[in-house]
Every structure is written in structure tokens, then in C-alpha cells.
Length: 455
Ligand code: S3P
Image (tube, rainbow, N blue to C red; front, side, top):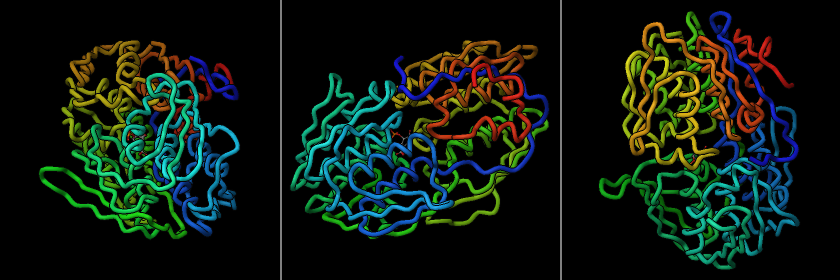
């Protein structure tokens, strides 16, 4: 696959951890919340300070795009500061907006651009250019915006925003927080009530943060329709400071590593505990994980806590399809846990995994098979055979397909397996978890000691 020019390939050999993983750590800021913080701050007139922003490549792409539209975004010590003329003061970007590897950046920004009165062009890296944009262009075209895409409704794409956007009434055909967010963001500049129905609840950071920026957003639970979210436009966002919690999706990698490497005892501080994101924690507990949540508090409007994880003997699990949206990014690393567990597991309703940074369903199966795990796909379910006595796991090559979460899952497999795992490229970890290998090594993983084959 063609890569973005500036990234060089970083292969890695990961050996079994030399001993238990031990220590305290904090994971980087939540990726979903970081994108939204930069975007919403750029829609608000005035100055917003953001603490704890994820400084991963995906989020930096969003920062560049918002700068190109007219916001001033700078780093000030630990904080990021956004000063903006507000949505009505944003202007046509001079060049193509390159969203790198980030589907969230591309799809949410499509929502914003669709109701601003100018034309923009958007592209991304080879992974993002292969992902479907139809899921946002179909609803957003109904509000009056015009999209010109490459074949298959893929990037690069032109967005011709509309001067007087029509408010949408939209029932989500796929369980996607990105699509929900795109429609709600388009609704900010439309005249009247925008209404989104989601049959299955997805992460609600957009609703929470719009309220934080002063936009009334109503959410009703309806037995027949699911969650119904409404807002009234035109809406004016008011600049408000934001605190970004630690990313539970990033935390999943040290969590699973600590559960699987015998004798480990790890504390992860300040992890976001929004109920629309914590399906993995519930699932791991069902598998017998010693995962204790303490010091629960609210920071910047989101629930946060400290996680204490001790190595555990895990058993197989059945994960229901309706839990998928609350742990959609965690299936590759959960599959690694299932491969090392006693008894087989069935992870159900994984159709959305096929359209992530890679086809994560196929790529996770390949990761496991290459390392001696028996796994199969039945419809949209993944069935992972647990570990049998005397089985030697590892020894395979993992193709990470420009997908950060596959790279980190492969590293976790290597730390807990019996034979070394060869990971073809770990460069994309920078999109969501800068410093991941160093952080794991600070717990005693010993990865960089013998694993770096190419800087
Ligand atoms: C995200 C939503 C999810 C998730 C992605 C981040 C968001 O995608 O996989 O990493 O910030 O809204 P979908 O909405 O496509 O499921």
C-alpha cells in the first residue's frame, strides 16, 4: 500500500516480556474528544484552552485543517490554545485538507464544511482514501451540500457547502458516532431542528461537548426508535475550556498486556469512563480479569477513574452484538486476550470492523492465524479458540496494514506469547499513541532492548 511520504516503515520484533509488567502510568488524551475539542473550539468565537489534548498525528491533522479554515491554534506549555473568529468567520482553505489516517477527522469535518458557504477539498493517506465516505455524503447532501468524490465515494473529495442549510431528520443506517456527529455538526448552521435517531447508542462525546460549548442538545431514549438526539440551529458555540481524559481505547493495550503477562500489577491513572466507551472493561471482567476501577470522579464533564490491573487467568467469553459500539476499537486486542484464554470466545456483530483503518476483521484473523491461533469468521462474528495445554503461540509475521491498533495488538501478542512476533510496521502507532513502546518498556516490557530492527 502507498504510504504518506513523510513516514518511514518501522518494523519490530517483539519477544515475550522478560518479567512481570509493573508500575503506574497515564495514557495519552482521548482521540475522539481531542478531535472534537479542536473542531468545536474553532467553531466558537473567542479563546479556548485545551488541557490533555492527544498529540498524535490524527489529531494534529485536525489542528492543521482548522488552522487552514481560519482558527489560530498554538501550544502553550501543557495546554493547546484555540482562538477563532467563530463558525461564520471561517474561510475557504487555500489548499487541500489532508486528514492523514483519520476517519473521524474526515467525517466530522465533512459535517462542518457541508454547511459553511465555501468550497473545500479533502484527502487522506492510502488507508483513509480507501474508506467509505458515502455514509456521510448521503445524509449531508440532503441538507443542500454538494460532494464530488472519487469512485466508490472515496477521498479525495470536494465539498461545496451550502449557504442556507436545511435541517436533517436522519435515522442512522449504521451504528456510527462519526455519522451521527457529522449530521449534528451540519445542523449547527441549518435553520430549524436537526434530529438524529440512533437505533443502537454510540459514543456521545459530540452531544456532551456541544452542551459544554453552550448548545442545547436534547437526548431522549425511545423504546422503538432508540436514542433520539435533537438540536436547533443556527446555534452559536461559546468558547469554553476543555479537559481531555485519558483514552480508554489506548488504555486497552497496557490493560490486556498486564492481564496476560504473569505476575503483572499495573495502575493506569485518569482513564475516561464514559459508559459509551467501556464495553471492553465489562467484557474483560466477564472473562475473569482482575481489573478494579477506583478514584472515580468527573473531569471536564466526563467520568474518569484509575484502573488497577493484575495478571489473571482468563476464560472465553461471548460478546453480544449490541455491545460492539461501546468497544468497537478494542476488538483486535480483545481477540488477543481471547486467544490466550481458556475456552473459546465468540465476538458478535463485527460488521463495522470491516471499514476501519484496515479491514480489521480480516486483519485480526490474519494476526491470530499467523501466530498459531485457531480462529474463524461466521457471518459477522469472530470465533477464537482459546489456548490449549502445551500450545506454543507466536512466531508469526503480522501485517499491520497502516492500522495503529493492529500494530499495538500485535505487540501485546508478542509480549504474552511464547515465540517472537514480527510486526511489519509500527509507525502508525503515532496516530493515536505516541510513545507507546517507551511506555510499555517503562513497565518492564523490554521491547526496544532487542526489538528495534529499524529505528
Ligand atoms: C469515533 C467513532 C468510531 C471509532 C473511531 C472514533 C469517533 O468510528 O471507531 O475510532 O470519534 O466518533 P465509527 O463512528 O465509524 O464507528
